[in-house]
Each structure stands twice: as structure tokens, then as C-alpha cells.
Length: 457
Image (cartoon, rainbow, N blue to C red; front, side, top):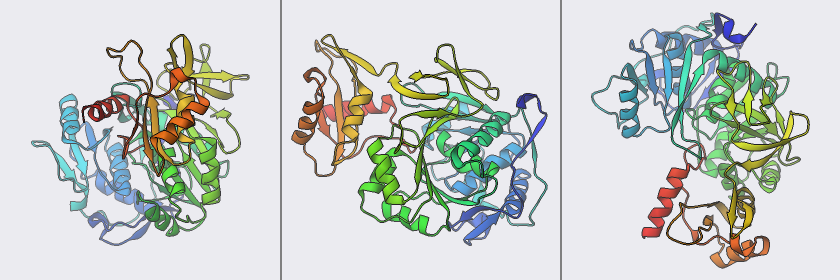
């Protein structure tokens, strides 16, 4: 029987006395005390919050604290509402969502820049403490659990509809593929440096703890020393959920990290060199995950040891590797990358369809240029991309680089050693930072706007 045909599915699959979250932030909703939250306590808080939510079809979840975001997300489900997950908390984003979904309200934990007039509900103005509950709420399988608004790296923001049965099935798949077959037995303590409202953070730091023995920290540290301190506060075995951009900053910082048995990484390509350096620095296995907002996580590899991806069970390629499908997905989805496979399960990525560029009759790969750049010593972050075609006879790649002691001449020498002269980035600019989103992605629209700003200076 297909999952979607089941009438109801559980909110979570955990023992009531198990550790669900470690809350370090002083939250008025929880009595201003750091606390470890058991599963049955979490269920009780979800039910109390659900009973107090406004009547509406949609909730715009803008909670900054990871635990309160999770509470709000689950309470909205129990109340029969759909979670709207915007890219950011900007007032322009709030206004756009309210125009598109007038039957909505904002759920937040103390946000100052709320639009008016707009119904809003502040979680930190109520007391959610009370008796624990063991009776797990049942959610209609077909209920539209969330609409995620994502820009990705290639196009305009779009809405991705996620029924509850899709989340349940994908979370069970993710638990097995990311944590191993003992995901129901071994209790892991997790720290995520990614926001919960983006798909990678949603899958790993919100949904995974609902269906695997994962105790999630509510902290989201940024700086290396803060990450080290947050990990040190967690018991072993530890799990770190992050992105290649953040891992590169952590590894290059020189800060000693507590032993972390496993790391999960996604949202951008990860080089073999960075993967090995990360495993050396943290003392654990690093699993890189491949996916997209439309499908979610779909393949894994241990990048320090292999460049071959393993497709998750329950998913399959079709139509000459151009689409991916699964029984839990609302519809089959196009694959943005070019795939090479011998058996349909193990595969390599050959770059996106628009990755190959042609200049002066020669073909080159932007993906390979970016791998070369990011593997260069002294490069903290960077990107090679094709700008919009201008008045020039030939449009050449542009390189924007965040460096640590490296010069433009050294970068030019590095490119010259490996690239045909026609693919040498022109211009090559050193910048303080790239306009990445919180999840580490670099949308093309933001990148082009940033480049135009640099050119006008």
C-alpha cells in the first residue's frame, strides 16, 4: 500500500522517555531555564501550543530558535495548518507571503520587524510548561505539511509543496541512509549550523529527530570557537550538520574541535581535500549528501574516500537519467545535474546542464574551475561563474575570491597552470565575503547583483 493511501501517520516515532532536545537558550516559553527536553515533554508542549494557535490555513514560521521553530512547526501540523517556510525574515518576504496566502499569520519568537497589519503570535509570550504526554498525535497523511520557498542556485524562488506522507517516508529513508541501520538504537547528540527553515536544515535538524534517536541542540553557532564550545557541551556520540562553506571556515581557523563521531554536509560541492581535512580535524566520518529542494536528500557518499554517490533506497532514476521518482513524492522531478551510472544506483555527477561553457570554439567546465579554485591554499571561499552577456565580443568567466593571505597574482598563476588561456577568469576580484544565503547556497540573482555592485565601485 502506498504511504499516501494511509489515512493518518504519526507526528513522531520515538520513546517518550528519550532525549529529544537540549535547550541552552533562556526561553520565556520554557521558564528561562536551560533544559534537556524529553520526547513526552515535547509532545505535551506541542499539544498545548496547538490548542492556542490562531485559526488560519497557514502559518508563516519565522521563529529563530531551532527548538521553538520545531515546536511551532509541529503544533501547526496538529492544528491542521500548513507551514510556510520563507527564505528569510525580511519584511518584503512577509508582505509577499501575506499577499499570496491571506489566510495566514506570523509565528515568531520575538521578531522586531513584523509587517503591519498582520496577525502575529509570539511563542515567547506564553508558558508552554506542563505535564508530559505520551499519546503521539496522528496527522492526516495527505495534509499539506509545508510549502518551502527556495531560490536554489539557478532560478527564481518557487514553492515546493510537501504533504506529510512525503516527509514521513523521506525522514525514515534519511535516518537509515545518514545514520545507519541502528538509527533507532543509538542516541546521538546533534548540533546544526544551518537554519531550520531551509530544506537541508529542515530534513536533518527538525524532521530527523522526529524519526530517529537524535537529540538536537537549539544552538546555531557561527564562529569556530562558538562551534567548538557548543559541541563540547554535548555528550558523545556527537553529530555535526553543516555546509562545505562553513566546514572550510572551521577547518582553516586552527581551532581545536571536540571529537565528533559523524558529520553531515550538503548544499554545495565538497572537495576531496576539504573532506579529508574535516575528518582529520573532527576525528569522525563525513557524509556528503546530494539532493534538491523538490526531492530532498537523495544520495550519499563519503567524499574523503570516494567520488561515487549511492542513491537512497526508495528512489530511482528514470527517462535516461533526466528525472528522479519515488512512491512518496507528489510527482517525479527533473534532475538538474548530468548523471553517469552503470547500474542506476551508484553514480557520478558530471555537472549541471549549464555547467559546460564554450569560448573561442573550446569547451570547459565551470564545475572543474570552481573545484580548482576552492582547492587552492589560501582560498576561504570563492566562485567562478559566467556573467550576463554584455557588449564585449567574448564573455569570459569571472572569479570572486575570499582569500586569507593569497594575492591576485598567485591566483592567476594557479589558474594559468591548469586552464587553457581562453578560460582564465577576467576579471578576478578579491572580496570580503560572497552573498551566500544562510544555508550556504549562492543564488545566481544575488551573485549577479553583487558583481554589478562591485563593478560600479
